Image (cartoon, rainbow, N blue to C red; front, side, top):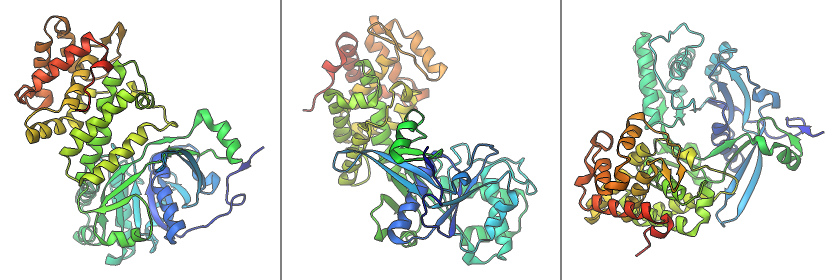
Amino acid sequence: MYKELNRTNYPGPVYPERILQFGEGNFLRAFIDWIIDHLNEQIDFNHGVTIVRPIDSQHPTLNEQEGLYTTIIRGINEQGQAVAKPRIIYSVNREISVYQDFQQYLKCAENPALTFIFSNTTEAGIAFSDKDKLTDAPPATFPAKLTLFLYHRFQFFQGAKDRGLIIVPCELIDYNGEQLKTYVMRYAELWHLEPAFCEWLTQANTFCSTLVDRIVTGYPKTEVTALTAELGYQDQFLDTAEYFYLFVIQGPAWLKQTLKLDQVNLNIRVVDDIKPYKERKVGILNGAHTALVPVAYLAGIRTVGEAMADPVIAGFVQNLLNQEVIPTLALDKPALTAFADDVLKRFKNPFIRHELMAISLNSLTKFKTRLLPQLLTYSQKFKHPPRYISFALAALIAFYRGEYQGEVIALHDEKLLLDKFKTWQPLYVSDVHQLVVNVLGMQSHWECDLNQVSGLTELVTAHLQRILTQEIKSVIPQQE
């Protein structure tokens, strides 16, 4: 029988509660709480976390293990080695439910040592509803819950300017801090809260937008027996994640000193604007995924890891990033190249089995947001269309035929788009050029006519004709 994970069996440091965290899910525990644990260990950051469960749930809480749980960080390290690093996280003190312990939740606002609020309530969590009321205990939306909390703090400390908080949402929406602040201000208006509170909100509190990046694979159901034997104790909140992580915070320069980033080697950046980092992530990480899916799938490969083990496919992705994506992005080339190298390592992670079909959902829309900006910028900058991105687009058109070499492809996208490709099915055989003209001419989708990009229609047509008549790996563009 294995030991239970608790502070009696595994004693460790207890930190004063200075962080309130909305969300108990796998991501925050393997990202924010993991980062705070490292800061506490490396520089005596001395911040403990109180987790608020923002939804009405009866699932077990971290209190059953006195706030303790294990992260196992797995992937390819800086030396190119596959590693798996277990770590007991001591940064979390307790978990409370806003639905079951509403008064205890408000009591947290009275803590003079409270400094930070972090959140991840999913993309749908940052929302506004005029049905939320000041008298709700609690209101439904996260921004309304936060407004109530901040209002209670404002009242308790009588509007003291030095009792404001640093609010750092991690939801995956653009400029999440600005959006959250907008909704909090709207609730203050909806509830007719006094002008002094609105002034305190804007002057005493700091809302930061963020970019977060780490694949968190969560509780390892199929491996738990073996991992428990390796660890030597039971942990019902075991959390697995990839080796890579990145935390970019758009905030004031003094936040670097608050987090003592000059004293630690953690992949955290405090910047004036997260936009270039967002563009880097979308173009390099997401763009590589989107380019990889149709090319690798048509080559008979079914996972990202298998694709990166194939030198032809891996070479295609690397050439696409280095020759066509990186030259179109705003950050300096060394930073972009380093990030691209990290992305390729992440794709090779032997601990994550990432099915290509699982990331093929809405691929045409993903191409528009992830690779079309690079295609247009490259074409304008170099006066000809990019070969590798154009090949990825041709492979995507072949993919959307819904069949390749006798095998049916289960497509998942908007019905309107899928219906168009069904209508165009005869063109795959009779007139490939007209098919490409039709696809590139979908102005309602692309928001422009891509046939107007000089040379693009002809290049995509040539690629597609070869893909439909030959083995795809034999016609992938080679480095010139």
